[in-house]
Image 1 (tube, one colour):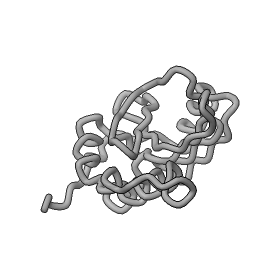
Image 2 (cartoon, rainbow, N blue to C red; image 1 turned 90 degrees about the vertical axis):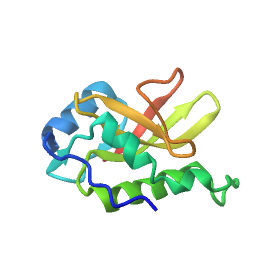
Image 3 (tube, helix red, strand yellow; image 1 turned 45 degrees about the vertical axis):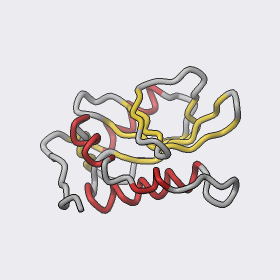
Image 4 (tube, helix red, strand yellow; image 1 turned 30 degrees about the vertical axis):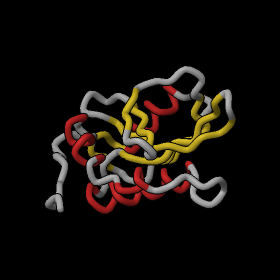
Length: 135
């Protein structure tokens, strides 16, 4: 079993700065920022946190355990370990329809997606248009 992991918390972004950045980068998305101070997550720390992503081993079941369930479960895992780090849930429109996944703000202040079903991190994806971001 992996020992408890605690990510670094030396970089942060305020509620207003994070909200302004997200509204600027995704002007058509509803944005909800929960905490006054949001610790940025180093890419290396995110990769270590994703080693704890046991939900990626769960089976996808339409309408019973699908993308929104995976995203909520991973958000809970990261929140329980990392607290007020800038990690959340993003809902996007895609050519195939709506999709739920996770997101975080890295040490450079960049928005990143996390696919909870595979623990894949990526910055952009053709056809993904966020309509709700909750960090």
